[in-house]
Image 1 (cartoon, helix red, strand yellow):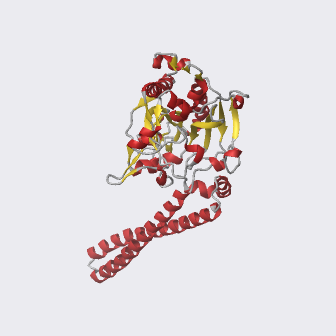
Image 2 (cartoon, rainbow, N blue to C red):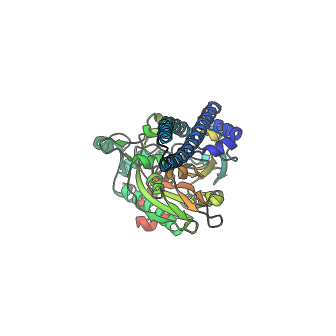
Image 3 (cartoon, rainbow, N blue to C red):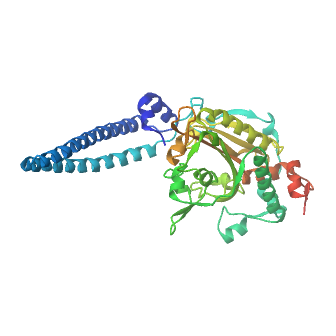
Length: 427
């Protein structure tokens, strides 16, 4: 969540930045927000002045009583009652203004970093790395859903029978390959210094609010109505919220966590080729990395996280690219995002498999996640970052398409110790 002092001091910059994130009425919202804050500050000043007057009159009443000036004491008490009534009315108005300000702030996404490209959608994202310039010429005959059916790795119809579309059932070598990918990703992250966490996969409203899913994305989350809990859309939500309402010492930073969870997303509005096979699921597996860092270092940390995920993707041996997202294609809470896309040789298209983002203080302000600065002694908001390392469905899709040969499926070298084989023979 953005902070009003910053918006007040950087009004023009904030409006331009919000418009880059497709907040077309940013100027109007900022004007309303700052006007409400002006009103709030005036009332706060009046309440404080009234309180000072009350304190002074309380002393005067005591003096009048001691001096036997009963009539004057009664007059003073009457004045005190009037001021208290005025303050009660002002407090109600103050609460109303605070709620209005909060509602305006909740409508505003995070401001994009100055380096974020200007653009309205995916076509204007900037390609910053391409592992193989000839990647798009790599073609395979079959898409992954046909390969999965031939080899009895995934049964999509069984998932429809048990639950519905978007809930596949992994079978035999397909299930082992899923488990191998999860274990490899976790081991890769732990070797880089991340502490593994096994968090809950149901989260409360405060957790959804803290990381920015609520109130922005409630329509995309599964909701358990009786218990007022949400199925986690990503491990980012429970893991980052472990630090909600925390005051860390500076020497506790950075915090590095990794976690595997199943993820649940309604994916309302998805259709066509985007939902074939493993392209877009309602339940899928993902390994996440999260860092809580000193604000002075968050952008250097972002580059290190990008390099980490790049090494992980490269180790799988398939063509991939890295995009810097433009303002119009970025997430609500992000200040800068790198997307990783892997080449789907059977579909002839790029598939997103990871996003690595810096949220600066947008999440930590909501989370009330602070640290004690060792130099100034002041309390400051930390910065939070996260990334997929990696999301499994599309990795598996691209892997099946890229490594399937006429007589079977090759297993990438890094996964062979987990699969205990280098090949899945054709049935």
